[in-house]
Image (tube, rainbow over all chains, first blue to last red; front, side, top):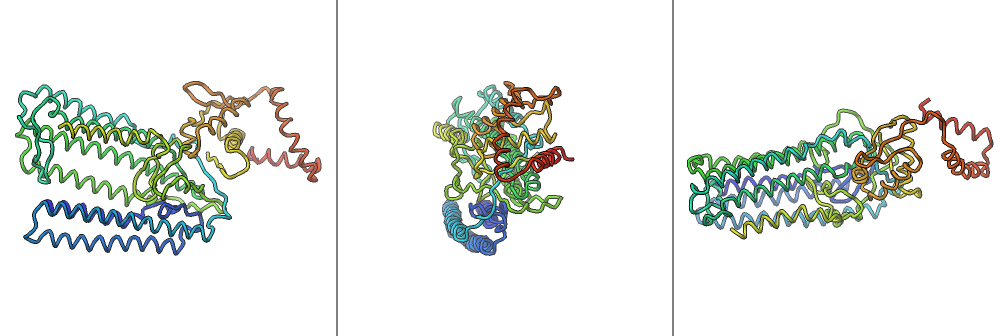
Length: 368
Length: 127
């Protein structure tokens, strides 16, 4: 079981990481703004292909090597977990190193040929775009929170019936493998963590909603459609995550109170189903929508307006990946290399929304 | 209803923003009673400082084109029926004079200027 889960996640990471250069805005390559007219440049295209080829080949070789090794009789489960994690970190490290290499190469190429020197840099804004934004209202993210609070109240009423040892961790087979003695705190610790995560996702949605809608200057009409789709699907994906994790955590918690409801098969299927649904959701988000909605087909022709290009804000992107811009009031911005959103480190609220929930969760786990 | 800002231009960004909003109103794409986006959301979409947008809105307020209402935001004033106020006329004369003087110095004649003014008028009114 452990091996299968590992191989699924591992394979998924390899596919995602090698596909990333092809899931991005056409005007950004390896964290570098590419001016209009150079977006189909052969050299940049070859960088994309090289990145993808290196990650996928090394990734697949280590995937098969790992599968072969893990299936031999002499290895223990701990060794599998340890080596599996080590290889996955190795792959992530490789992607970072390759990214930085191609980031430097692309920057050099752009500078050496003075790309975009003859183009006017324009920022385009649609005044009416907010009325077309279809992101989910943040209030519906409060529904799962209400469920959690209800469960906390229910737990309090069932305190006497609960076992003396409260599960705090579950193994890959869905069975608890770590316990804490029963206290009024430990019986609701899991629910508190769940509540914090739900609050964090609510905050993400609210802040993404407030973030800037950055249209592509030369193709403002089609990028408007893509941006709006990307935002809509981002908020659906967040909502799916919060609903699924609420179902899983509530189920695990209820199976602690009422030992009968969690039969072995259900305990196995719930976490596995959760994992599969999250992976499928991520794949749809990445491949059907694409970063900034770049893979959404637009129904009309949108010829690039000649002579203009996007404003080059590379100066605010450290290594093309970390956004630090005090002027931009957006807390969340779209990632440049990767799928999803990143934080504007020029805004203190960005740090707070990211680190406060993490610290709280760590404190709760530490107190258990 | 697109707005185009050129950050590297010599014209300050808040002026570009104010000018484009005025033009949208003149063209009838925005009309009296319409609300402008909030300062925060427009600044976020522009990726620029909120002060810049705030300054543009205050410029428009001073010119009597919008009203900044607490809680409702920036609302475009209803179209002027009774003709231009004296104070606004005086300001426009003051702003127009150096431009006309420059045009004269650079060789534009009276007829040239009148034709230009009416062609700009026709363009804005979509005639």
